[in-house]
Every structure is written in C-alpha cells, then in structure tokens.
Amino acid sequence: MDYNLNGFIIRNKHLGITLDNRGLNYGDGLFETIKYSRKRLHFWEDHYFRLMASMRIVRMEIPLNFSPEYLEEQVMKTLTANKLENGAARVKILVVRKAGGYYTPQNDEPDFLITVSELKDSEYQLNEQGLEIDLFKDHYKLSGLLGNLKTSSAQLYTIAGVYARENNLDDVLILNEKKEVLESIKANLFLLRGNELISPPLESGCLKGIMRKQILETAPQLGLEVKEEAFSPFAIQKADELWLSNSIQGIQWVGKYRKKTFGKEKAQEMVKRLNVKVALSLD
Image 1: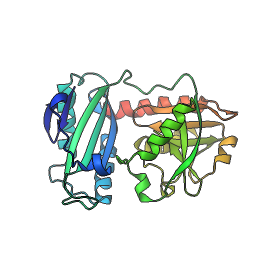
Image 2: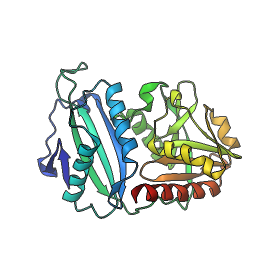
Image 3: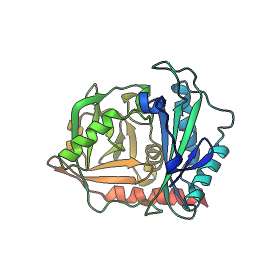
Image 4: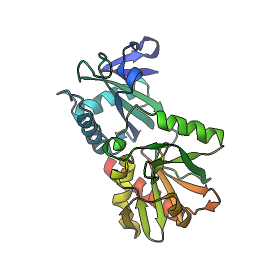
C-alpha cells in the first residue's frame, strides 16, 4: 500500500516514523475518517472545517496551503496511487504536531499522513443483525470541548474495545464523569422514543460527529422531533430504537442492550434518506 506523507507518495517499507514522533509519544494528533465513493468524498466540507477547527482548539498552526482544494487533491493522489479512485474507500487524514519537545512542543507546525483502504459498499447499508451492546463503566470520558475532537489519544476507547471483545459484545457505550451516556467506541449515539430522536449534547463530551450532524438535519424529514439532551443509562430501557452512527457505516441499529430489545423501522428509513442526501450532493 502507498501512503501520502506531507504530499509525497511513499511505499509502506519506506515510511519512517522517528522515535520522537509526537503522535507516538504523546498522542498529539487529530484525524478525520471519510468515506469515498462515486469519485467524491462524502461531506468533505464538513470534515475539512471540523479538522481546521480542531487544529485551532489544540493550538496547532494551520499551514497556508491547507486549503480544502489542496487536501482533497492529496487524498485523490493517494487513492490513485492505490488504484482506488474508481471504487469505494475509507480515507484517513492524520495530522500530528511536528517532532520535538516533551510535553511542551518545540513548535506547532503539523505533519500529515493520508491512508486509504478499500470498502465493499458504495452506499450506506443497514446491518441485518442488530448489534448487542452494554455499558463500559471502568473508566469515564470527561465532558467538555476536548471530548468533541477526534484525537489520536484513544486509550479509553482501546480499553473499552478490549472489554467488548472479552464479553462477546459488538460495542459498548461510554459514559462521562456525570454518568451520562455519550457514545460508543466508534460511533455517536441516537435514542428514538416515540417520535423523539435524542442525541447527547456536545457539552456532555460526545464526539462532534459528521454523520451525527447529517442525521440531526435529516430527522425532521421523517417526522421526528430532534432533541440534544443528556440522559442516563436508565433512559435506554424506554427507547424504541437505538442507533450508532459514523462516517463510514452511516447507521447501525442496536438489537439488544442487556435484556432490552429494539426495532429498526426508522433506522431503515434514515439510511435511505442519507443515501439520497449523498447522491444529491455528488451529482
């Protein structure tokens, strides 16, 4: 596989990571994961502006050439180098502060690395079998602005992933220090109760997801009332449907949480709407 390091296509065996790399040593990095199909990046503008805003929040310098056109060009170069420009792919843009310093960096300029991998489906597909999930309560994610960012500091999610694997679960739900439900290991969370679609608010510390934004914008078209409000695990027991969302899979529906089971009727409708939304944006 070929990678794009700071604009240069490099073979895997030649991709050198120095021992003082700040992503390796301190998790001092940010990333965007984007779906590509039909020769376009899905919701590219939203991904780009989230990345720029995140870089400002963590006080990274934004290079003058980091325009949406430049980064999109670099993504396309990487897809072409891997012969994926005519298919569907998962694109990851990783931005890491340049090496140097200990906890305090010597400078705030970034390096970027673009990786791509093939995807089977061009459109979003709802999972046929409902996911089985539970709570992860060993550690909590702090509420606040930093919780909204996609960072390379993923220790909490890694430990939660091990817990899910050990307990034969498809995913687990993360809580904040107030014991409010935030998200899963790899997705934002939506709770459907009657005609109310509820998602944790950003101030609770959940990821500021791109697919989350699309769902919140699309929900009224399905006759759903959108609410961004904090809720405890007890609220899950009263839900009719439970959705997990991210930029690659769109929506996955949860079939079972402990002894509670859920349907998928509205989830199916939402997936259809999201595919239409993507198609219209790509035409």
